[in-house]
Image (cartoon, rainbow, N blue to C red; front, side):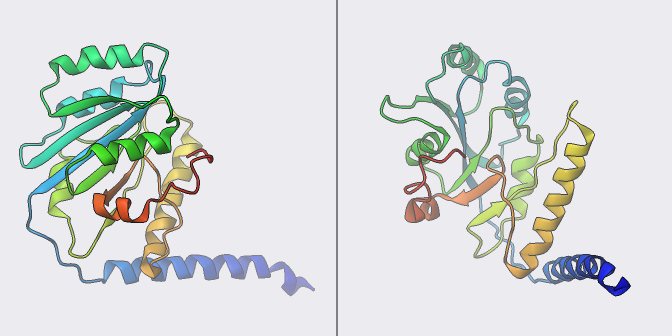
Length: 217
């Protein structure tokens, strides 16, 4: 009977052993990096984000795009808090290629906003971000140097910063580590919508939102 009490412990060890094996398999994979210029559009859907813009806008201003063909598309999902007007004024002094789009009256929601932005993009790669996201100044250079042959999608880890609850940050780090290990089996568990880079043609081919517009992101 006492042995039964150890079953959860053994299952726990097996799971973490499998995750460690997945991590080792992934670290030993041979990859071929591409030597090509990065052509990328950052798609940012937003709705009523007036009080959450600061970190992202500061990051976009500091983003180094000297070696990249970068376009930034903001898509307004019927905001009514003044965030559209604020952003319109802000981009007048923004020195990177950008466009500000209004989602048509017959379209609503984040998924439709992303799709609308992708359809207006002209670059090979699409990078979706949220209005409260932040990226490092050298992000594009780092991504370009890690482009791999045959890859059409990159799932990026998302870290919390600022005054967020510390247990939430720990949980996010653990989940990101588990997802990375599962990539060793080609079975990623999680993907954050604020950190996905994908081939535009792949998105158009799959049309991933066509059957689930009614479900929140």
